[in-house]
Length: 153
Image 1 (cartoon, rainbow, N blue to C red):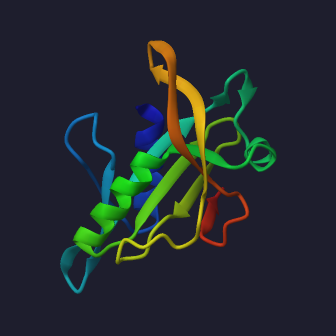
Image 2 (cartoon, rainbow, N blue to C red):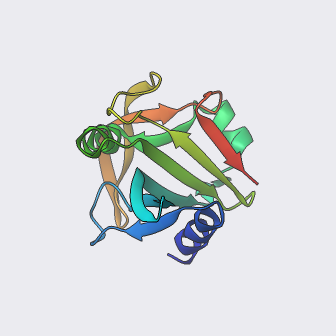
């Protein structure tokens, strides 16, 4: 949670007002807003993650490039697209790579909830919960080669 707070501060330093959604089980962690003509205006929705490891390997840009991109459940992307369309704002996935001290920001949809580029979809074995177990989920991989990826160093 401390790292997510740091990421939010970085976004605030870039002019965003970061509003947390209530509860831990939401698919979209934050509302992004900016002050526009004196009014606080929603400009995006984002899922924010902080990761240091991928299994037993440090999670780095090189690791992501060599392993198909950033893995996220497809369900989260679909929820983000639906919310994006509902509120007429883009949906972003923001990932802090703690091993490198960088933040990756993928714009996933436009303000109509349409995916800005295709993503690779695979059914993969993942951990069921933070407490362990195995689940097979439809996952998406966000590409490190995306023209919609911004790296904040």
